[in-house]
Image (cartoon, rainbow, N blue to C red):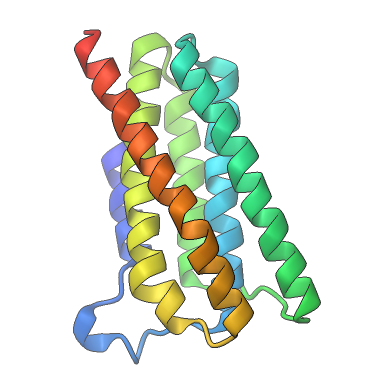
Length: 175
């Protein structure tokens, strides 16, 4: 299930290099993608905080909820200020559907299997979001303030990826 979700995420966020201009996204579409991507991680983080029995995984889930809620708050404030209405698009819809599939899969797991699936997904998810931010969202953003927000929050996604990789390594050693 996780592999299907990550493959869907890759497809949703990827823009083939030779076809970037034909598949660029607008600022309202970027707003929807950012809010949806953060909400997906908030929902998974809430589940991890509630369901994991591993203190490190539980704490990471709580951090994902707090950090991604903050990003969504900043994004919502900015689009309100700019009078931009987030525009649902294929990418935001695919992210939402993938997030729902991931939650369904995670809800069926317990203990170490849950922790491994959650953390493995967090590693893959944050890597794909970073790739999308770098290759699609920042280059496609036409509004300077929107672009600046994406650049500002990028280091948090990098830190999340590194933290998730650290936990992934810890979980692998504790087998």
